[in-house]
Length: 158
Image (tube, rainbow, N blue to C red; front, side, top):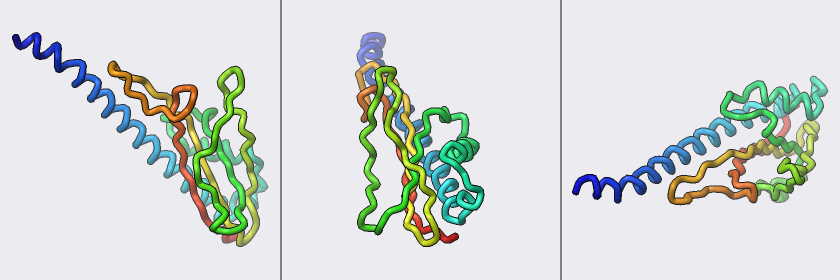
């Protein structure tokens, strides 16, 4: 009798435990991405990026240097641009477009701005998901991944 009860409860329990584990990893990844974005924004805010004359590739490499092994640096997407006003800022998740190989084809902007500019820095990553035995999926992308994004809005000090 106990084996039958366990067989009935075990799939639900396993699905719940896998879901809890996946959600925990997602929250940890989001918090890590927030920390990385805050650090990268500080470099732009204080003028370090501008005075070093960093290119988009150099800025991404600098951001990647602070990313833990939790992320694959090639999967990071960084968009940095000035805004004309606080009211004009769009912090929504972008709509990603993919090529035939499944690679993101969006052209990301890199403009560290000048003194006094309102800046928007978005750091994005496609987080791979696994579906549990009951088909739980948190994917928000067509390729089955979850787009996690961190946004920093600040005014350049220079």
